[in-house]
Length: 293
Image (tube, rainbow, N blue to C red):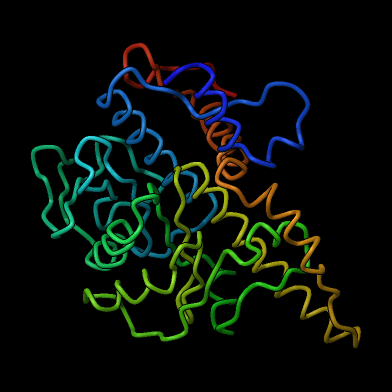
């Protein structure tokens, strides 16, 4: 790709999200090989699990985050069933194909696969080639809000990141152990980046680990804010004021884009690296030690 074409591509990717900054905004890293990219994605995915663990998004053994493999694109990386999110490391992750077969030679020592994780995520990755990372967990406010079987209301600037870009799957079918249920969820997600699973929780699917983590955290907080707002409204005898569609769409084009999600998600990983003293070395393709906070 020529430098001019690359600049055009970068500009298109950033879209309106670049309107909120002055200066040169960062872009996702570029890799010298697919193997280097694979190692970075495994490192990043393990970080995403630890971030979820810090935020309390674990509920026993429920929940999963997946990332499509860049070498074997018919496979994805996922957590071994039963290992706590906060303990996840790159070498723990398991590689699974779209038939549910764990690729033992490339996986961590614990190859136990969560069947629900496979059924949901394999359907999404198969239906959406643009989705590289998908996350679902039984977070507290997401679960509470999902019981209403409704979309988020555009009552804050942050909720506008999901304006006309999330759906509701309103047919709770129990623990997902069959292909049909996973396919139904993928169909309801459609081309959107998130779906609220009624009586179950939240699911976010984007083109990067960073964006998926950011939009999951934001959606969880939007659920919390909306629940709190309606509780307050009942006591005040007033209804929340919703943001008009024109303004909601304008905000969405800045905060709801894939680049906006990637950029907003980076600080979560940078903070984790500072706290743990571990980063990814692009020269060696391995973890490296950093000074800790």
